Image (cartoon, rainbow, N blue to C red; front, side, top):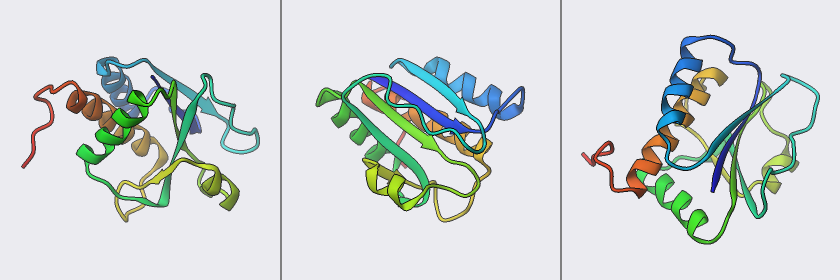
Amino acid sequence: MLLHIVARGRIGRSPEAELVERYLKRVTLPTKVTELPDRGSKSPPPTLSPAVTVLLDETGRQMSSLVFAEQIGKWRDNGMRECRFMIGAADGFSPAERDEASLLIAFGPMTWPHMMARAMLAEQLWRATSILANHPYHREG
């Protein structure tokens, strides 16, 4: 299953970009990052089908890393070929985009800069695939 991050804005050469790259290199599933302009263009259609779309959204569900990993594992095991993680612009997502998404998730009740959210997502993807592979990276309390 392809783990595809689709994000508004360019990350450029930055500490956050280094973190994203570092974590995505470790992910055992295929990964892809698509950057979109801050405004305007529509999100590209999924690269592969069937696909699920996850929005990083302030109204989203907060879940533990284990639950997140389990969800990715279920999608993978049920034949999903692509999981798209959408990071929106400063204005977030429209109600229509929220309605069309498979899942909305939030990294807590605080607002995070988009570049940090991308790095946090990359780390959680690494953590999730580590959990699914029974790797010792993730340890429960």
